[in-house]
Amino acid sequence: MTFLKQSLRTLASSGLQNRLWNRVAASCRGFHSPIIDITADKGLASPPDPKTFPEYRPRDFFSFELLHESSISRARVGRIYTPHGFVDTPGFVAVATNAALKAVDHRGADEFGQQLMFCNTYHLLLQPGPELIEKAGGIHKYMNRNRPIITDSGGFQVFSLSQGSVTDELNMKARGPNRSTEGSLLDEVSELGAKFRSYRDGKQHLLTPESSVEAQKAYGSDIIVPLDELPPYHIERQRLESSVYLTHRWEARSLRAHLNNVKNQAMYGVIHG
Image 1 (cartoon, rainbow, N blue to C red):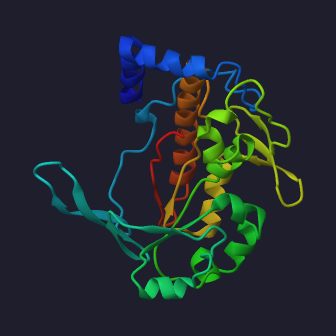
Image 2: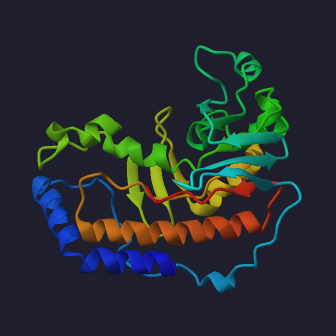
């Protein structure tokens, strides 16, 4: 948290940063996010004091080994040990959106050395659901894979539904007051979480830091991710600062939920956005 405050103060005091930010803001004036009720109740409120969390202690089921560090660039080669095997870093992570790779059988990918696989909490939340996966014995048995698996929080998919693709976000034609938000599946963002409608049946869901972690506990993935907010690319500076603070508060809640029931899992500290 101290680092966050220092970063924000540095950003605010930097004339160059201010000029660059103003140029970006001027280029997208008139853009409006479809997100409703954005942290209006807390704004730049700080997350809980780190001292209110239990002191970190190593876990025998999860560890990181530093194999080599460059004396020039400080780039590192390491190895993460999980309950389902190790992952060499840096490494390639294949995305199995619905617990399955597209066009490739994951068993074949494993034979070629695929160590870590990524599954999407959002899509699995809507179909088949955390309860069914848990009943099947967890994500590893559900997809018949006995190697490390990481799941995300679901936040990226929830927020990208309202903002279009990354290409849309970065495309100059997508900027300006004429950008349409009609058909957005994101209904509301508040301190509690994000309300969205399923692209499958239109049913409304509420994704909170706690419910995201709960779903990932049901999946039983080796590495889980806390919930963060993904704001649009072209937004006002004050809105972005509020989003950073909201993410820190959400991640603190995610961490508490994880520590209440660790279940041989590790939580990855995702960067905001």
